[in-house]
Length: 353
Image 1 (cartoon, rainbow, N blue to C red):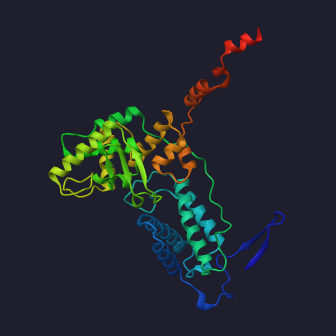
Image 2 (cartoon, one colour):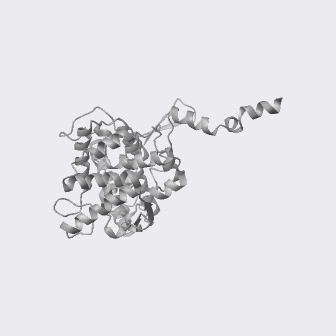
Image 3 (cartoon, rainbow, N blue to C red):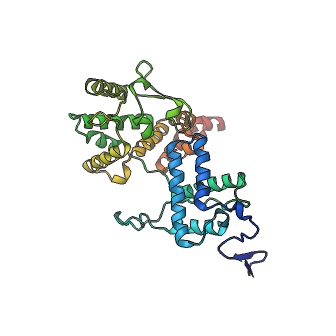
């Protein structure tokens, strides 16, 4: 490699795109895709969920597509250096959304910082694994920091917008009644869409007005209980009764043909309801109902730790992001909880007299 002096004191630049492989025994060389397959097989053996494994596959595919264009001569995992990963982060940070998909409308927006951080996290998991397994001698990602970005306040549906959405489906049809019930459930319990679509009648306990989710249904693999309001429970039970009359399935949310409802199909129907209700389509998705529940729960006086248990956030920091921080809410909270206001100004004045 060629070393050149850096005008900044104490810093040197390493020029060269590939690592020096002369010191690596040829029998220890592992091709790029073989290295990923070793990683993938190990994670599958650990019992990782299919969705997580799919994320690993997609994350690696994005990196390989970029690497094929950037450095097509690289064949072995030992050739990947920190300079490649930094260059990849820079590429992702400036990449336009859907630029590689001709059929998608180009918005001019770059990938979100969350997407960049997520894709880098996948590579970090993989290279850390390969280093622990002694497949690579040096870990190229060990000194790569996660990119920093500003956290934006989450946009959520308003109560008025939710009312309009709930009024959009034609509840005289099975699909319309099912969709409205699913929207109500998501907004009332903060379920993830895949959790809701896996629910069966046996998960509902009418006596306690709770939904019981076993560990295998939850992202964190821990069982949890989610309370429901009386109105939502009644609609869910009505839907279960409707299903038992016409379909031979224990699932609660079904297609018109009695098959388990697909998340993508529900997402498409939500866009139609959003258009009918006059609500921006970007504000309507299954996850927006979860955000609505979290925000409203806190605004109505619920505490962070209870909310964390209900929605099964792995970290309290994730739950904290839903704390309403707009100016009006801060002003109201201060007015209500100000120590001086609660002490009473008249009482303070009496003491002075």
